Length: 325
Image 1 (cartoon, rainbow, N blue to C red):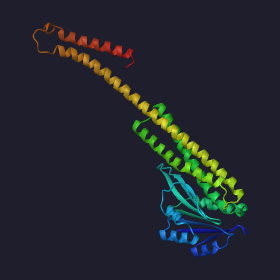
Image 2 (cartoon, rainbow, N blue to C red):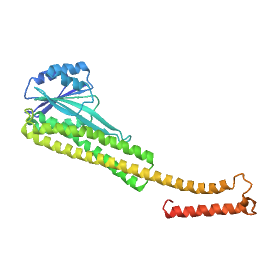
Image 3 (cartoon, rainbow, N blue to C red):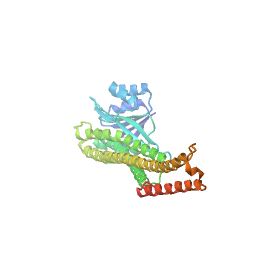
C-alpha cells in the first residue's frame, strides 16, 4: 500500500499523491518536500522505488528483511535509518515491537514497514501543523516522526515500572503464588529487555543525527534532534535501572523461596527425628527375644507409650528452643 504527501514549503500547502508517476514529477522539483509511506510492499515495488530514487541495493535489501538492528547508515545521496515502534495491548499485556525503515534524502522521506502503524497518522498531523518550520526542510518531518515514536515509549515504560513496583510490594508482603509470581517477574523482565534492545541503539542513531555535520538538515533542526536524544537517553537509563532492579528482585525472590523451602525441610527434619526416637523404643520392644523383662510387666505397654510421649515432648521443646519449630 502506497501513501504519499507532497508539501510546498513556500505555499505552505499539502497535497496527497496517489501514484508513483506523480512522485516522479514532484521529485524533479528540489524545493518540494514529500513523504512516501510503503506498507507491506512487494519486493518488485520496493525495487522499483529503489531504482527511481537511486537507492543502494544493500539498503533496499535491509528494508526488505525485518529484524534489523536500529542503526543509521550514510550513503552518497541519502541516509538509511532503522527505528522501532512499541505498543502495549492493555488486555493481553502483550508488547508489540515493529520495525520502521527510513530512506532520508535532501527533499524526501521514504518509510517502509510491514504492519500498520498508528504513529504515522499522528506524524502527519504534526507535520501539517508545523507550517512555520516547513522551510527548514526534511528535518522537520524526520523530527516529527522520531519524536512521536519516542514519546510513545514513555507510557509503556511507566506502566512497566508500576508493574515492577507492584511485584516488589507483593514479594515482600508475602501475598503471592510462587509459580505465578515468578512467571510474571520473568515476563516483565523480558519486556524491559526488549525495550533496552531498541532504546540503546536508537540513542546512538540520534547521537549521529545530532552531532554529525549533516548536509540534509537545516542547523535550526538540530536542537530538536537533541531534545529527542535527551528523551531516549532518559528512557534508556530508566529501562536499565529497572531491568537491574528486576534482576535483584528475582534474586531476592529466589532467596525467599529457598528460605521457605528450608523452613519446610527443617520442620520435616524435626518430625522425622521425633518419630525416629519413638520408633527406636517401639523397635526395641518389638524384637522377638524371650528375655525382655518389660514385656511381662502388667502396665509395660502404657509405660512405653508414656516414655514415647515424654521423649517426643522433650525433643519438641528442645527444637523449639533452638527455633527449629
